[in-house]
Amino acid sequence: MSSVTSNDPEDPKKDDDRYSAREQGLGYIFQPRFALYKALELPEDTAILIEKEDDLDFLDSTGGRSLASLKHKAVGERLTDLSVDFWKSVNIWLTRYHANGRVESDYQFFLFTTSSVAPDSFLNFFLCDADTTKALPSLWQLTENTLATSKAKSLTKIKDLFSKLTALEKEDFVSRITIIDRTPRISDLPDLIKGQKMRPIRVEHRDAVFERLEGWWNDLIIKMLCDPESEPVYSRDVSEKLFAFSDEYKDDNLPINFEDAIPTAPIDARTDNRLFVVQLRELKLSPNRIRNAILDYYRAFEQRSSWARQRLVGSEEIAQYEMRLKNEWERTKDRLFDDALDAPIEDCSDPELIAVGKKLYSWAETDAQTLAHLKIRARVIEPYVLRGSFQILANKRPYPTVYWHPLLIDRLTKTAGDAE
Image (cartoon, rainbow, N blue to C red; front, side):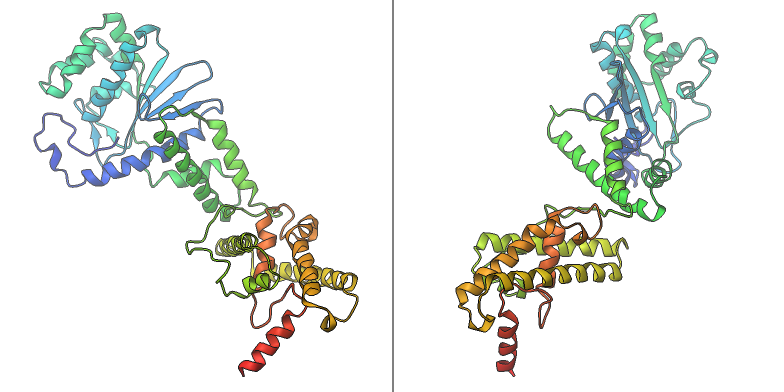
């Protein structure tokens, strides 16, 4: 993980850097965001683990394992011969190398750092495409000689582990190390992901898609960290999730992200005085059924607000959608009332009126879902959108746009008159 202590392990002032806490904090949140960036870049059969053998582990389809150490450093920092960041990672890698068959292991080791390697450091030979033939007498000997120049206790274990390798193993070990310096900083990664991986998505939707993708990814990372035995996630999982999110922003679709939402205030079907709830109590519905209606209302309201904030739907589209719902409700109401009531409404008993009102409400709960023209868009099929939209219309005051009990409007009119 990131720190911004001095590069030199022997520097007594290394803990005084006033930026260390900030950069360390950035390092912790850099880890999952960088993992997401790499997941979209690597072959889709690559498995990804977090905080297993290193900050990140990448397993390819042939069984090869790459261990990646991540360092998010203060702007302007450089990696020098005795940089703590490099040697801490070497300590991890040497331990893994010893434990997994040394030259017979399938390990590769990567240090991703936002800092740059100092021009005069031997660490330049670990950069991608470096000409290691110029590392004289050899890269492993340069590594060993550099270790010998320091008396820091923090390097004692590394010296011991390295000394236990044969010359051939030392050469093999250092050949597996790659430093990727000038790695994009945490604040740069979103634009890189949106610019490189989201080109098929309209520019105006990329921020929303990225926010949803990273939210899903962070939840997944938390689950992986909470369960040490969790299965790895594959790059293809990320690609599929990105496709699913982006697909929701096409012209015939909309994102659905409130299907499990619960209001913060307690739900009380018996005392809630909103008009749509009062209407349902007039029908003598069970508290559980009314509770479901309250959830539908809340989820639809929040979903529609979210669409409006993202400018995915405008007021005109909502108005047209609500008009379709009202028109279909009115046709269904007239048919049900005609078929079920043998006398004028004012002459029917209350049990008869409640029964037909329940039939109308049941239609809105279930049968209306099957009508394609009642979807706000063709591929938006989540039931709470339609059910909750009926509840929103049933909550309009002073008189609801839709209602269930045949005498509701008369009763509301009488109540308003009595109040005056």
